[in-house]
Image: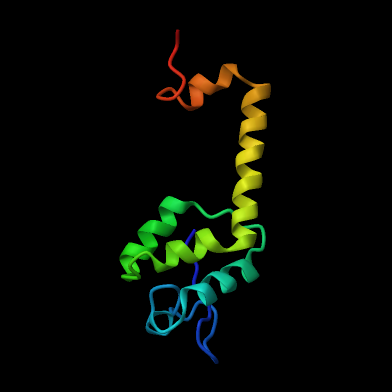
Length: 106
């Protein structure tokens, strides 16, 4: 799902500004991430997707750094990882099915 954020005073949601529009190019990356977290406070961003967005937007790693440095996102990602590990501990037989490159069959 792709959505846009109103990134400029007076901008309308869905108005095409988003992370890639002209208004976004003038916004600080930390403010962009704050806007994202305000819209979806339990965000646990996919870092690969953020890296691609950073590359596409020409932000030279600043957007990725802002996401990785955000305390709320960091906490959400840590909780998601802990939940994945706990689930795999309860379901070890599924490890090979989900991650065959990391858990080869004996």
